[in-house]
Length: 170
Image (cartoon, rainbow, N blue to C red):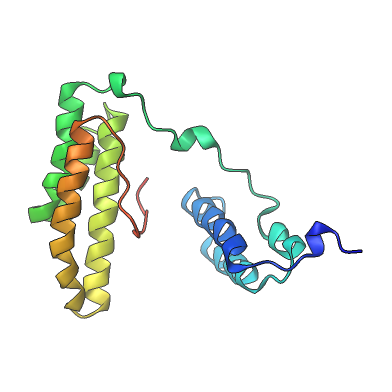
């Protein structure tokens, strides 16, 4: 009789484990070599026991970390600066949001969160453009639309997360 730990895993079961490893690496819990090794183990894991062993010694993700901040805690200035972090990214790439994150992010977690998201988005686009030898620059047209949507979210006091980006800055 097989226990649930002996069952084979699917790619859908591997993805959250790999995401947890990425979070642990970003938190500084894993060095680069260990991160690479564990990702390889997760990708090649055959059973749930194999997959569970990859993250067994890592602290579980705290859910409150991802809870959106209450709308009432942000001032109008915070919302305006958070929206500006997304809007200023269009002409300045990651430099404008980075400056806002470093200057205004110290006094407002809301501004820092939005500015960090804008920085991550712009760095991802820049890396895509470099890796594709400039062809990825076509994606910047979509970036303007997403930046405008993110700015509206920020103005209304909501959290916005760009899809499919590298989250290098937290």
